[in-house]
Amino acid sequence: MRVLAVDPGYERVGIAVIEKDSQHKEQLLYSDCFITSSKLPFPERLSLIGKELEHLIEKHTPTAFAIEKLYFNTNQKTGLLVSEARGMMLYVAIKNNLSTFEYTPLQIKSAVTGYGRGDKQQVITMVHQLISIEKEIKYDDEYDAIAIGLTCIASEKSSGEL
Image (cartoon, rainbow, N blue to C red):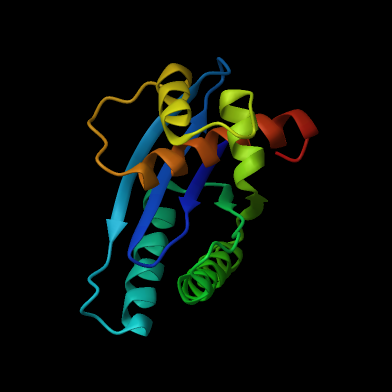
């Protein structure tokens, strides 16, 4: 099973490709924080993100796509723009025949830390314990994408979806 996992955004997009091998061990095949310039018009930023996802789908051939569900914080303008980016990302996944799965922040934190109200540092600590990461990660978005991928593999494998 191979999952393309995304922490949605339009300035920074966390991306991870995780595979569960025949020995039932998760392996991080790829992760990054894709960044778009705030100087670009919003539609162009969406286009760049979509092209990056298309490239990664072609390169890594995932069978599933996992994304965090959006929750609105105090900045509704930002929430609306992230919502638009999320919609485009789901379209790319469906267009490429990937099974799609969505998880709330509570579900992700529960799956990774065992506690739905865990903080960022607890998520980062547990991600390092759950999967081997052989590079330095600069942005939380990348850790979040890895956590989303791990949640998908754990949740959907146990439910029989994948």
